[in-house]
Length: 84
Image (cartoon, rainbow, N blue to C red; front, side, top):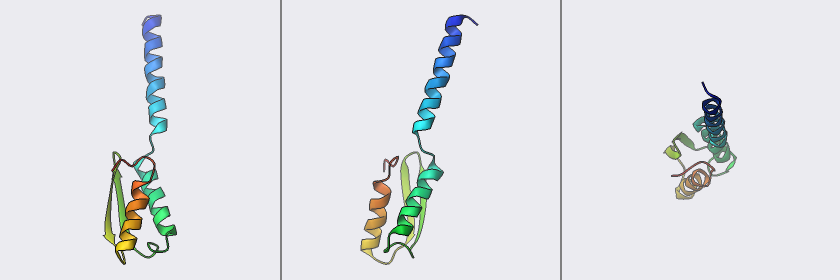
């Protein structure tokens, strides 16, 4: 492989690694959202499942009232890495 091809390959690897470092894993974001919900008094006893894939979070389960539902939605939607 020529020096130019080696340099190009190294650059592609570096760019790929940098992009991966900036993206948070689905598991890490799910854990963060669950922890924030657990620390919210209106959601602490709620049964809410969090699923995230590709920036889209889906919340399912039961909450005690509309205020708790809105709080869960706000926590998820204001989390870094969540698009929808």
